[in-house]
Length: 356
Ligand SMILES: Nc1ncnc2c1ncn2[C@@H]1O[C@H](COP(=O)(O)OP(=O)(O)O)[C@@H](O)[C@H]1O
Ligand SMILES: [Mg+2]
Image: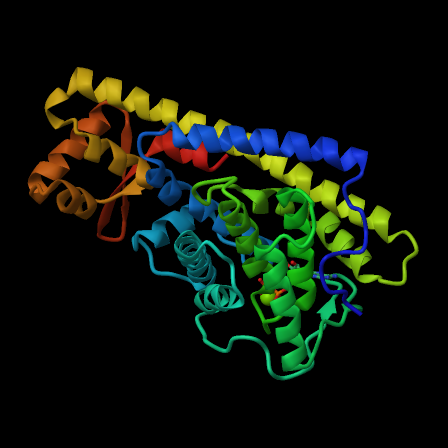
């Protein structure tokens, strides 16, 4: 049976503490870098779709960057996968707002996130029968609590663990414990994996380890997906005699993930910032009349743009907007493409950074 928290094991071995330090270090560097940016929310728009895409892909909801970015600004209609990824993105952003506002992560917040993700308001599951199966063999690997009241008790225990200090582990160690516990309670009939991965990021926000939700933890999980399932499954086996080792392995996995993805995010953000400066210098030098901070930022909110965005944001006519965009094409900064009757414009270099 699933244990309530706090855990009866000492997860913070020497090996783990080393990883805790490294993960905290790179995360702090990421946080500092984001703080130094002139417009950090710009990044949120640009980057959150990627996390949404990777997290959904873990559940075999697969879309390409191209399809996703086009669908996101309605250049092409949604298909089922792009719709799910857009929902994920909306759920992440709403969760972020709620955590910033309430400075807590409650069961109700978690239910709201899952509701946006799944576009329904079923909440915690009421009908029994949910089991977790091995995705390859179909064997049942975990039977989460079945009874509605029992699930609510587990959730309230988890809520306490998230918001109060029930043990003295480092928040990054707790993050792994919380993720396992949430997935094992499996409170919803669907969307547990994705909701749990949104919670990971929100937990960092709650603990002020990050200011905006831009860590690609899901890209690490998708790259190490078999290990992710294997470790969760090992933890389910409450009869194992070496559970402290199994917990150590899981914790190490999550800490490595935080360290790796912090580093990757730092690299990516630096590349985007440098590219913005490059654009700024070129536009100011070659076409100084059309330069404005708003215009530049618009070109980096999304790798694709359309004339409507420019007219709305800058309050200029279609003719002038189209004129601006043509000038950037001549400078080699944008490329024009046509889908059906739509013209849209690609920030080629941003596109290649984001699709790496
Ligand atoms: N053995 C396990 N124990 C606990 N959680 C698991 C186990 N195996 C998989 N999971 C979690 O369950 C998730 C899948 O649950 P599901 O409700 O279908 O989520 P989603 O709809 O987001 O795919 C996986 O992403 C993983 O986080
Ligand atoms: Mg599912």
